[in-house]
Length: 410
Image (cartoon, rainbow, N blue to C red; front, side, top):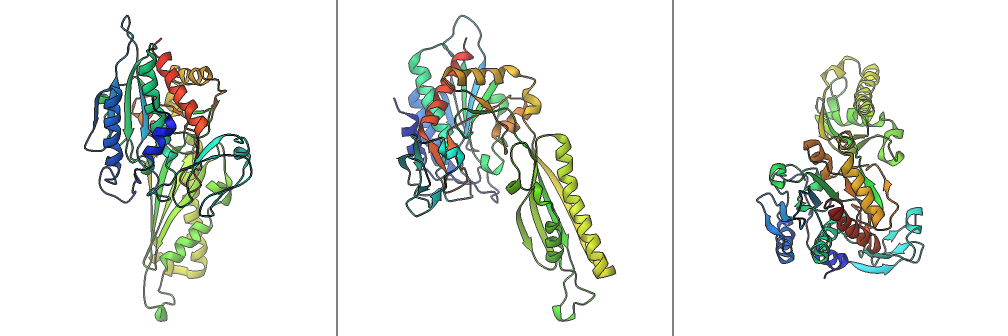
């Protein structure tokens, strides 16, 4: 029987970085390599209907062993891809026992000691050499699910019907785009895509994306007085007026933010892209208004110095919903949350409900009608070369999944 660690160390050897600018589905063909490998592993475990479809969704089924009554069908879900924020190629994992203080990786990169890290003294960490991310997000989730399936089958404890799905492109917000909800056939599901051990999640941010485009007027700079309108300069003024106390760098917990993540352009046109995140509808509306107010305030100030020449400047703001807070919907199915909390307690944890300052595939799946909270993997510092996995906590995630299968089979 393979441990979650053994599986994880194999999975991180597959490069599965997704690409936001791609027009294909999945966004990168390399995700198919891990997908095909997992299909073979699922078949070896004895799951039924193990396959990967044209969009790179891996699915499989495990029938219940409860024959005297009807039991629900639950889903276990994790994602194949890794973030494009750092390389996921040629990952070189290394296991260390954490003794406290900073962790210096092979290339000199430092995982700085934090209050969170101090709690992990004596635990065993999987780290990289500092040149790549590790891939715990979310190959640690895949490893926990695969190891749990093997244990569920071997133990012969009563368990629910189980559906498995490994999705592509979660990191670029497309993990549910081609998810066959009806074909999946689960009553409830769980994503295994969280962080610290014992953290369970029934809420995520509500997420919007905003694109701000500014059109200017370009002429030769030697003849620009009272004629040129520099779109890049206008955009810079707008960004400078956004409140600093509403950014990712200055917020935590349930606090909302407006995040500038990309800006480009020149004199004739400039464009900025923003992520707007909040936990409730009131703050969601405030986020949008904050951006509009910055635009209008910047143009008003520039009008004072530039006069009517600024009339040549045009702007457009496009807001796009990405996903809603899954907590809006999960309160209607408290049983899916209760079972998760009980499963974590059954393996000796003191589970903590933590709102996710981000999203999971479960955000959209829950909105689509499949209640899907999230549980931890034991991974930390996601999307970074300082990413690491706590082996003991990934083992606890595996045990929690085994308990979930049993609780739903009672």
